[in-house]
Amino acid sequence: MSAVVRLLDGPFDPAAELADFTALAAGAGAIVSFTGLARSEDRDGMALTALVLESYRSVTLRSMEGIAAAAHARFAIAHSRVLHRAGRILPGEAIVFVATAAAHRRAAFEAADYLMDRLKSEAVFWKREESVAGARWIEPTAADTADLARWHAREQD
Amino acid sequence: MAEQLALVVELCGKLAEPHGREVTVPLPAAGCTVAELLVRLRDSFPALAPLLASGKVRVCLNETMARDETVVRPGDLAALFPPVSGG
Image (cartoon, rainbow over all chains, first blue to last red; front, side, top):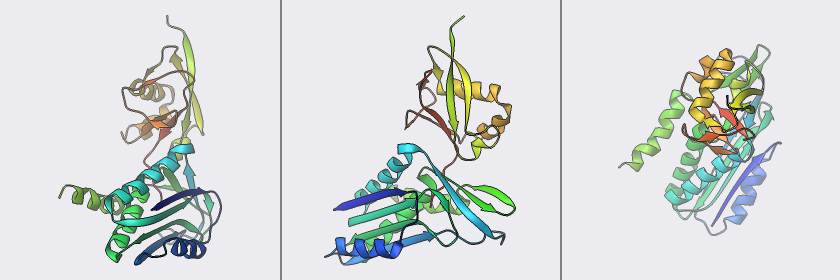
């Protein structure tokens, strides 16, 4: 079993991470990965120059580690990898990478989905979009909150 | 009158917009609760008041999330967290 969580202040290569994770997870029957990229336009179609993610000392990394540990407790996954950028991210660069490995596909899919939903709404980051028109802070949307609520609802089943 | 010291509070995310990355508030040497700290901040920095009024701002003390009743003392590492957004 492995759960690797990294907070990065520079670009990373998602393809290389997936290749490395796949080699590590030899023997697993299913691997799922997700890469979140910085968009080139905001929701109104305005061209973005950068996405800036603030973090806070050890608290940010601990929040990510807690989410990864919860995924291992909840789903039958053998390995996970969670990478998250902080700092200034250019359009097209990867912000976040999540990979999960399991014996069967359902657990791998669900664990990756769960990790992303919780990272979006609970990991300690503050995100702002920068464009020629200025900067705008981004907070979790109603859709993000609804995505997170799916998992809480299932806990009560 | 009790001796007054001060606490530096780091302001994260959009909370930094009105006054910059950190503010200093007077604090009794014996400290005060987190709930009282928020009142002091609202009183000392009115531009922060609307941002704190949402009730969604959390206080982090010495790299741990604090409750309303947690006591904050001069010299603590204090930060205000607005709602987080990753991914």
